[in-house]
Amino acid sequence: MKIKQLLIVAILSVFAFTSCEDNKKKEQEEKDKMEMERMEAEKEATREADMKMEQEKMEMQSNSIAAKAMATADLSTLVSALQSAELATMMKEDEGPFTVFAPSNAAFDKVPKATLDKLMMPENQADLQTVLKYHVVSGEITSADLAQAIKDNNGTYTFKTVEGAELTAMMSGDKIVLKDGNGKTATVVQADVDASNGVVHVIDAVVMKKS
Image 1 (cartoon, rainbow, N blue to C red):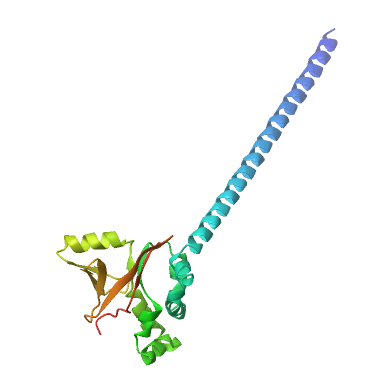
Image 2 (cartoon, rainbow, N blue to C red):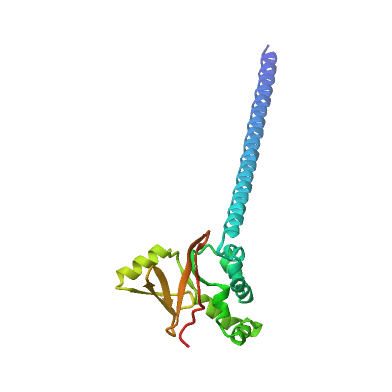
């Protein structure tokens, strides 16, 4: 009788152990499944985030200062200069924001051809960068902002360019005029061309820092 009872106990113990192991195995399988689902969800979220960032980047670049300049026939000389100075990428990809006083083709025509040709030479890239960066300001300044700053500062407003030298803005009637380091002036002929990384104001002359 005792042997029979021991045998029953042994059988029940084996059954209980097997059942327990099966439960543990199922729990582990469920955990592994949940972990895989979590990892897949994270991967999908990362893929979607990357795609969104790439789309936003493409939209930004397609509406960038460089893109706006390339789409404007009257700024073709400026575009060529930016490319020669290797600054086109900066105006396309850098989030900025920047304010660019963009000389029109007619503005570049006022520069002696020999001077412009010399600046466009590869060996003079640093000098061309200096000239172009003198037309760029960090931050976004609309024509209304500039007009208000001129008014608040008794008729003239001086600000620093990316190049490091200063420009002075003033009003001539309802037009904004810039005075460079040599005392020469350029008038804003088209204001507030909005871009994804700043704003462009077209001017009728190339400004130069004090020589």
